[in-house]
Length: 74
Image 1 (cartoon, rainbow, N blue to C red):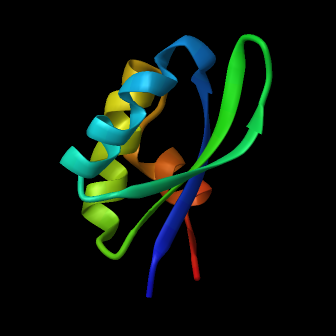
Image 2: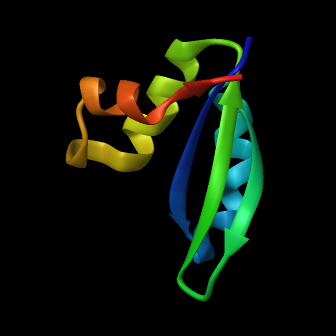
């Protein structure tokens, strides 16, 4: 079972995305790219890895409970 979350990432940060995702035990795919932000789907077999990645990307703007509502299983 995989856990997934879709987040908007600044397009200028896409070159760091592979290293950031793999260092958190996650994979990613580009959903949509725009001039300023790109929509990225992150996936992991481990919910904790995905939660940690999301927390670091979103910072203090979101809490653990909110992240749980954004994650879906596949």
